[in-house]
Image (cartoon, rainbow, N blue to C red; front, side, top):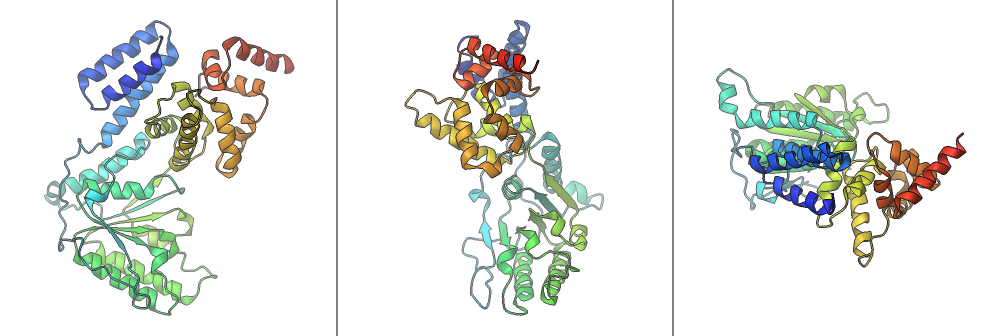
Length: 395
């Protein structure tokens, strides 16, 4: 279909409001394209529909943003924070619901459903209390850096209309003997007084194995103090811990968390959605978005965003003549070698024949010769010749 990139952009905008009639028309267009043999274009619209459906599952419009039933005084912007007595440095930061990004984070359907269940518990506390059950009071979120753990915790608080007391636990550690445990006690006294969500970031900074021979007795006492205070808060408020290093956590720490949510690295379809999410205001062909997603195998959402920024810079600096995508990806791989899967990186810098053949045969990409030409800045006959050379060389 001629000008499909424009039609695709219009469809993306139209289904963003969640209107069932609009979605139905986009589905009709997808089915018509598929019937006419335009499989790649139909697949692109299917991806749009899937992405819109997942976003709607966690969209604030679907959730009734309610004040979670929780005791405590009201936190205000003028509330004095607890401080380290030795340095006078604040022990926490406060984020109010209006300060938190409204967009729902993008995760796989499995993770999305798990998050939804936690929010629904807190949004229906009265129904749970009638059968003698409380919502989950503690949640540990773990995964690789850049997978969106902190953003997710903040977003959950926004849906529950709760201010967040954010504590980076490495900042609680003091060089003065006994001060760290005292800081923890002061911090929990503060959060237990107010109605809030406690967010313990960099949890592994303190919650290490208590039998680690490298740690002195002081840090063991600190871990004990942290566990005791978590226990005391369990009947008062909602606490979320975040860590990039789950293997460092003491087994006793794991037992304190009712919900233990792992945020995995995104799969191919999720990477497509993430790349598409960060692409505006640049309008990129679907083949470009797919290749960026394929190229970022094993990357986190933050790393995919970085690749998209590089693409957008190249587009802005090309003076209307789009720089071919493969060259842009080579540039990123050179400047960020440690972030990119070694096999993907090697293939990118291999000869064009090998790369084109893999792009054509890859089950995720499902590229036509025209798609390969679009990302490589070549015509279909040139791409066909290159693949033919590769086939001849392997005979």
